Image (tube, rainbow, N blue to C red):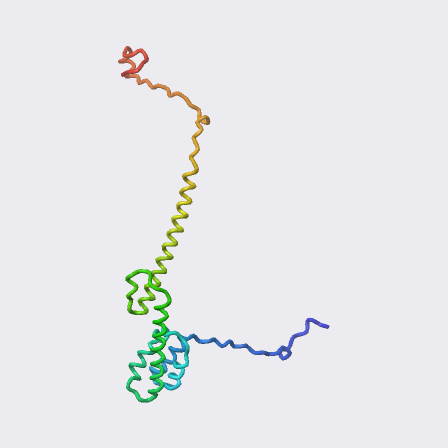
Length: 192
């Protein structure tokens, strides 16, 4: 048996490159079908696809699907049944989202209790969560700072050991001009 034999390409089974189909997101699908409606191509298909999609009202709002329906398809009799059903669906999704936001969590402070728009209530909720997280962070920081301060206070500074140093008396300096003029001023030799 020879291991140095050349391998022919035809002996390797070809399975091909398996392409993985990426699943498009809800946003990209809604954006695509809304663009179809704006451009006026495949209107029934786009309307039917938007009707069958199961996604949040926020996706439709970010793609401005509802505005396109009201602006371009309000007085058009063509495909009016599909347009009306899609408008109903969007209204139902909006009501469900409003109901979900009202019952999800009651606002903490009094000024957020009367927020009329759902996007504003979401911002208020996010702000409250950020404040709560910041308060927790501040508490942890102050606890950690207090722990380091308490360890610094408990450790007393060591006294300096002066036995290591040699202590010598300072020599007195006598100036020549003052010693000659005041030699009899005092018995210990000080001038003043």
